[in-house]
Image (cartoon, rainbow, N blue to C red; front, side, top):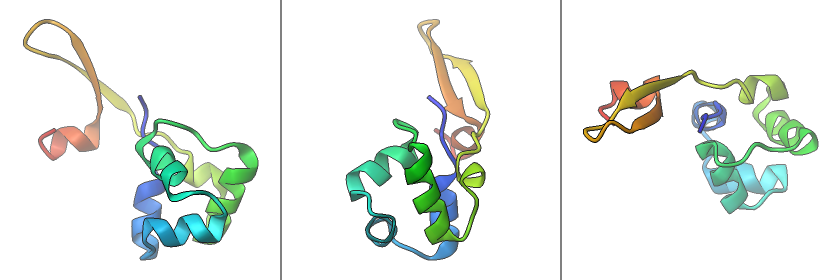
Length: 88
């Protein structure tokens, strides 16, 4: 699963998740799913979110590269490089 850079952009803006959701006319739950990378916002929704943040939609939809690591059982785990730096 890839993680979009939306959360980092929101944090840099100083907005709380609920504030951004209200201004962008999306539910806080949907915004959370976008930030986690579980869902990707549609074009219009991405435009609204980016507009509130003063950015272009392409900027919040840039993906972080994933790194594959193998767990103790030989299964492949995909994680962002940021998660690896933070220890998981």
